[in-house]
Length: 287
Image (tube, rainbow, N blue to C red; front, side, top):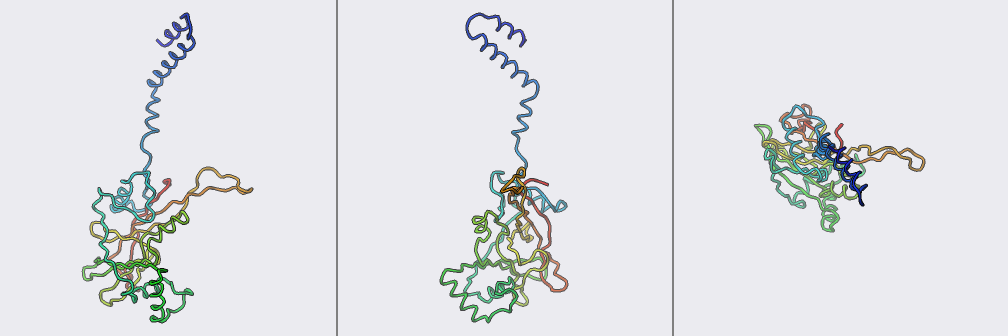
């Protein structure tokens, strides 16, 4: 049919013979493309792209799959949740703790103990200064506005016999967001997590691989406590190129977001609470 239309057009007299032929040829090719499935290929190219997050570790745990689905429930165009992971309304199995703000100046002994366990006294490794001397300097920092630390607490129970208190200390509030805005690289949400032991009333660091020395956030999964971490990594973008005679790769920051269960099992030698690895979710290209 297309060949007949084209032949008829070429035989017509008057102006626009060539233009008419081209229009008919275009229509013919268009119809052929539809029949050949080109639209199917276009539809595939325009289909939704891969999710923003992918599971790197934890395939055997339901909490890990729920965590992944929660993150992927948000629009792909949203920036990666580096400093604060959000809970989607469709995932009510996750909740946040109800934190109680603590007056920093009224709890300087807790802050003093926390800073000692974080090795914030200088030089690193030295013994702690006299508490009264330290407290006078710390109060001066508070009143001058130089320091704006934050201290919060919430109850938790993972052992039937004990109800404990989690304490979250932030020497610099929103430190992850500050770092992300300044350098383009964030990592480690929240603050530094401690346990205020019910029996001793002493502040204690978490033991194990996921401990107090890195900033973490706290969620509950069906009422069970989990801590979140966010570790910066990088991936190569595009092909290497010469920069000042050196073959250079362009790097883009990506992150490994971790979810770790606070265990009912205490560390055998120290008696500390442990946060045990459960899952890691990656941003960037799955690999």
